[in-house]
Image 1: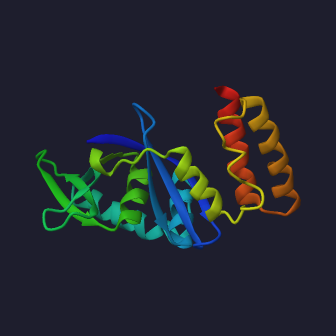
Image 2: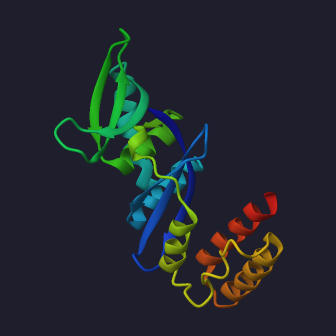
Image 3: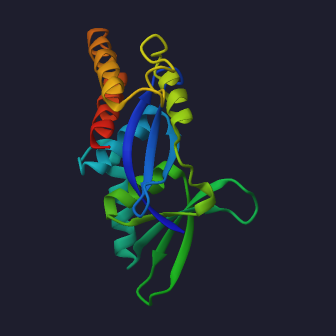
Length: 195
């Protein structure tokens, strides 16, 4: 099991869903889940500790646990014994330090972890390192085919050339009011400048 943290929340205009990207603390391996807009907004608000009506149901749940002398210990993404798919489990500790495992919807588990500052764990086999190839696919998700092409991410170019091309793409994205793509490009430029 590896501890993961919320890294980014990014909108994919083609699928009309949000990409919630997590990364491990020890080696920056990344893991992505997709959510509809309401869950993604709730996850983003919980990560910023913003109070809202849509998050009040989680406060009620946590207050109930508190009344029952139960505490969220951690959130675990793992295989359920009956199938090979990724499931979310709340690990709840009682007053006698015994643990209860409760199946949860993935988005709810993430929000509860964020609200309680609990660690989120994931089985290693579900971790997926995002490669340059996956990044290219993500650019396509952002409807930026004409902005991004293989040359921009080509390993044949120097870092300076990539930054120059990405800066041009950033300006074009801003001019076209494609702010999701612009934010991603800005982050990519920062990463390139660090390396």
